Image (tube, rainbow over the protein chains, first blue to last red):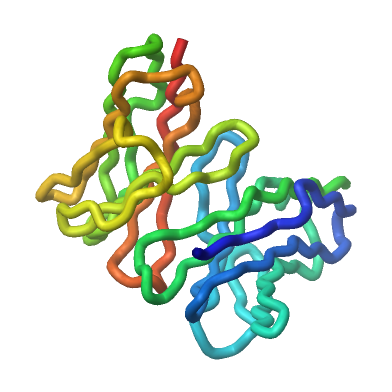
Length: 114
Length: 113
């Protein structure tokens, strides 16, 4: 069975500082990893994904994530946070052999203070 | 390009009734997914449809069911509504393949009284 853990319910950072939102996963095969963001009163939006290749992937709005196979992690990062980055972030995993089912983490609320 | 659309936006039902939620995927997408987002419980996978067939379902009772139509739109039916079914129901679509990200609709807020 596949699973995702986001160990922090809430992350608070000051505007202009770097941010990290943590995610670890468990799958039996090759993982496909995704980050989504949910702004208040809006649906989820895709940010970035890791399928294969370079461990550092870049996505929308200046976000990036690093895939670490040995630590089974896929942490979301941004060098300089903006107040507008404040939102709920979800990490998700798909196992390559089970094309449809995505398992989502419980979400991390990011608050960026001016 | 039109995004994923869902209807209705809000739905209020009483316990024991049936609810029907609808979803139209992005043009060209054959896979449709349903999720339940209850307060404090994150996203729970409900159902996955592709090419008109149910491909996978999550750990929900049989009173949660649905179907996908030939135009790839989908509906989710919840029978014998219970108070704990109150949640935001999200629909997403994607092209075939595990590597494809999902595109989400705005959701239907179901309230069971």
